[in-house]
Every structure is written in C-alpha cells, then in structure tokens.
Length: 305
Ligand SMILES: Cc1cc2nc3c(=O)[nH]c(=O)nc-3n(C[C@H](O)[C@H](O)[C@H](O)COP(=O)(O)OP(=O)(O)OC[C@H]3O[C@@H](n4cnc5c(N)ncnc54)[C@H](O)[C@@H]3O)c2cc1C
Ligand code: FES
Image 1 (cartoon, rainbow, N blue to C red):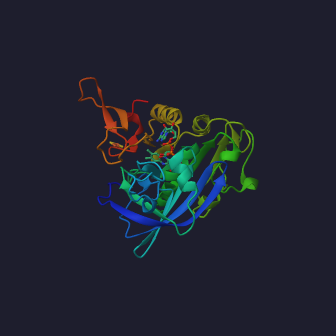
Image 2: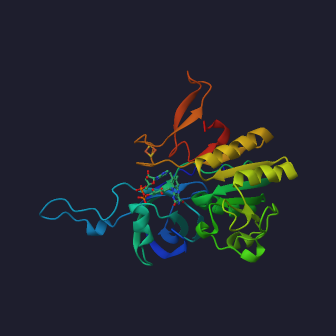
C-alpha cells in the first residue's frame, strides 16, 4: 500500500445505485471496466454534466448541462471482480456539481478520470491505526479501514459530525454509547463486518460522545497512551486535522492527513490547489506543494496548518 499506482484512465462509468443517506448527503456506486489499480486516499475527478446533450447548435455553442470543470471525490469503497470495478462515492450536496450527481439514476453514465493523487502510506511496522474523520472527510477512511484489517492492522475509527442528522453512515444506534463514554463499539454497520470498532461524536450531543472528535482523541490517549506501532490517519475539516496533527506530534505518533483544496485540473497543471509545506531546503523554510499531485495525503507534520 505504499507507492502511487502509475496508470490513470478516462472512462464512462455506469451508476449502479444512488441513494440519499442522510440530510444533504448521497452515496452512489459506479461500475467501470478496466479501471486501473488504485489505493485508499486516491480520488477520481468526475465530469458533473452530460456531454451527450451538449452538441453545438447552429445558433452557437451549446449550454453546458453542469459545471465546466470536473469535481474531485475520494473513493469510499472499491471492489473488483475480473475486469469490473465498483466504486462508492459519498458526497455532500453543496453546489451545481454535487446537485447533478444527486440527480443521477441507475443506468446513467458518468465520465470519470482517475485514479489521481497520492494514497495513504501503510508502514510495515504499523500494528494499530486510529482513523480520525470529521464530516464529509469520512469516505477515504472507510476504504482504508477495510484495507488495513486485510493487512493485519487493527483500526479504530473516531468519527465526529455536527449532529446525528448529518451522519452519512448506517449506524446501529443500540450499540452507541451516549454522553461522555469513550468506549468504542461495533456501531458502524459496514465496518462491523471487518471487526472495526468506532467512537461516534456529535458536536450537539445528539448521538454518541458529546463533543469534538479532537477532544475524544486526546481523552482516549489520556486514559491509555498509544501503543508503539500506532499510526493516525485523518480526513475532515482543516482545523480538525490541524488539532489531530498537534495531538499526534505531542505523543510522537505518526500522522497522515488527507487534505482538500478547490481543484481545477487534478493533474498538477493549474496550480489552484496549493498547500504550504515545510521544506528545510527552501529559503523561507517552506514551499507550496500541490494537493492534487503531492497529496491529497500528506505527512501531517509537514503541513503548515
Ligand atoms: C481530493 C478531494 C477529495 C474530495 N472528496 C470528497 C468526497 O468524498 N465527498 C464530498 O462530498 N466532497 C469531496 N470533495 C469536495 C468536492 O470536490 C466538492 O464538494 C465539490 O467539488 C463541490 O462541487 P459543486 O459544484 O457541487 O460545488 P461548488 O459550486 O464547486 O462549491 C460550492 C462551495 O464549496 C466550496 N468548495 C468546493 N470545493 C471545495 C473544497 N475542495 N474545499 C473547500 N471548499 C470547497 C466552493 O468554494 C463554494 O463556496 C473532495 C475534494 C478533494 C479536493
Ligand atoms: S488542481 Fe490543478 S494543479 Fe492541482
């Protein structure tokens, strides 16, 4: 799981299913033929419009049926059988691209480019993993959780959302502790199959641990210091990831963060996705990295938060 797979493709994928999973969030499954090898943390760039309806007319250029630029999305789960690949995408509806995606129906075609970016790195010395997700940062960590268990690493998911109404996963609510219990349980149904425990946190206390996921991580490690061989993987709001990086630095625990930027090309060309990273060799001690090609996964201690 260490190096970035080299091949990319542009493909017309078929929508297998598309369902609303909670307020403002959708999960759809794409089926693609001969999709290249890829790893958790990588993303695809989706053309969120229908090119078939955009032929030029005698009166001039056609109106686009959606945004001109592709939109980046993490792969939340990936399965393969023979030459066929199924990919799950979970998204939050915030603008024209995600509105177009939410309106897709089974059988529709969606043009994708990928896989793009650098995946998470799993060091062979890693024995335990803590996955810290916030909001719509959950998708890449779901696929990573399964991949880690298959590699013999024991993951624990800490997942924070504002409120239970915007939690885009199927939850066994009977299994969730309420209030201030930091005991993880098998509450996330799709992870239960792989034996991955989870601690759910809500800012408003409507489900699970009442408080920020960053406080839950610090609290867990106050109760019991992290074992050697622990690695943290995080994805979510930038302030959350910065807090996770700080807690990890204080404990000497390695941490990888999957960042988001507004992306134009996803291919390292347009320079729209810069991230400030430490570089002792640079005159100012830092330089700009590109989220799309140097990331989206970065060593959290290299990022200037
Ligand atoms: C590597 C990567 C992986 C991503 N994975 C997912 C995912 O799995 N699920 C998901 O829901 N979203 C994901 N995103 C974010 C997703 O790409 C945007 O939400 C999407 O492009 C919005 O498109 P839109 O046309 O609906 O809205 P737009 O009109 O493009 O955006 C609406 C508003 O959101 C802001 N915005 C758009 N993109 C971003 C961004 N990346 N960071 C901060 N603000 C932004 C815009 O500035 C604007 O204010 C990912 C982004 C990156 C870079
Ligand atoms: S999105 Fe164009 S350079 Fe990163």
